Image 1 (cartoon, helix red, strand yellow):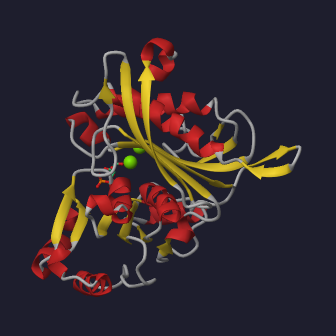
Image 2 (cartoon, rainbow, N blue to C red):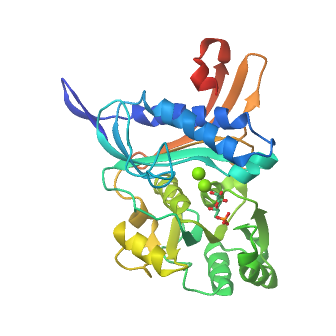
Image 3 (cartoon, rainbow, N blue to C red):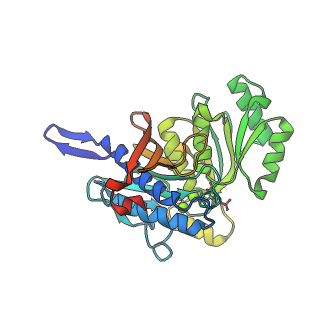
Length: 331
Ligand code: VTB
Ligand code: MG
Ligand code: MG
């Protein structure tokens, strides 16, 4: 992880993790102006703009590897863009507004999120779907598998957790393509938390006991898979992901990004290697993070920030006074 040269030699720059929270806070506050206003692109644009500006004040030499798309389709935070004030060489994964549609509807679970790794630490995932399965910490490696039927995974997870299948809560994105796994979970007696958007938060939920989620199942964005992997590297838990290709063009694009085996199942550590930091701020409320709350003088943010090296997970409540913040931060 980023190291700074001091009179005592090189020291790990722990403070960087807290700097990252400032960046997700800025994105979340900007996006929150668009909650429920029916314009998901405006909400996303506001978050991207604010996140990009906030990065200008962070002492890193960063390269965006998971971002808003290719340079010709994204004006900011595009893949390959250099960001930061200058400092240690790091790679950055961002989703300035994870949950654009739910934000536009005022629904739950939208977050502003990013992760940071040593240069070369993240899987360069193309913006296609990824099949995902995730469980929390403290369970044997491989107790569930992306290759196993839903029923088997439920049975094995219940056995490992010393509970019944009907004690389990499974988080799944509410999509037609998930009809079969939803049916299989219900037939086996498991309970389901269907989410409208936001599978980064959905995957992290397996590692946060307060959420009550035992397993995450289903397909979502591959970039979101890498962000979730970064979080689980810090907080613990297992995530497996496999890229889902819909055509040859996607296979070629993935190969160009360095994917050699299109059928590979990636583990948490395959997607986010080495020393990793993760930060997220709630935009709309969810089981893990509260959404932005406006006050007479500004806003209150609720964020999570963590580092894989120490395993420390911090929840940060920020009380922002808009009268004393630059307009660009307020969004
Ligand atoms: C998921 C969800 C995201 O994209 O990754 C999803 O978690 C996958 O795409 O919040 P579909 O919407 O096509 O299912 C998001 O909804 C948006 O990034
Ligand atoms: Mg996005
Ligand atoms: Mg997203």
